[in-house]
Length: 203
Image (cartoon, rainbow, N blue to C red; front, side, top):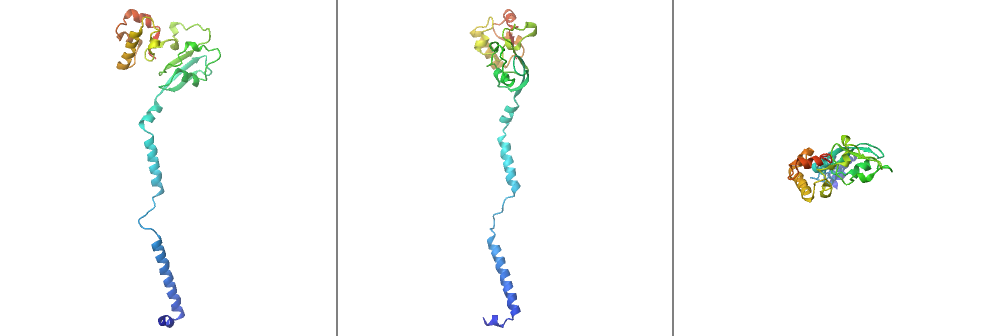
């Protein structure tokens, strides 16, 4: 205390300022946490983008790109060419075309049939005469690549055994490239094929 009394007023003011400066410095030094640095904002954004890329798996991207083009004509609201997924059905394409007109003959179509690329679907009017064979109506033909056992047996000369053989062939060898490939099936010779060629398609 004697030392403080010996100080001049100016020296006392300087001492107070020094102590105040040291105190403020110590406060900030101990107040700031050590070893915990805040991450840069862009680091969090990068990790979010990486997660989004992982979510976009090759499988999901591949499914989106599996699209075929189908031409819809006849008694529908909006005829035209429509994009459909490869697992789509005829009924899906008809919906895209706005649905049937009131005078459409829906009984001539297999709405459950699978679509294929470059397929043409013609919706006839009620009482309309089937198109001549020179201008084949693709919807009146039976696809040997997609028809089931019941549909295949609608063909002349094709019973349960041959229908099963056709399905087994396309499962093992892949889709028929041309209708003539049907002759690769045991029991289907030239005579049988002549009866079938105008009634079948590979589309």
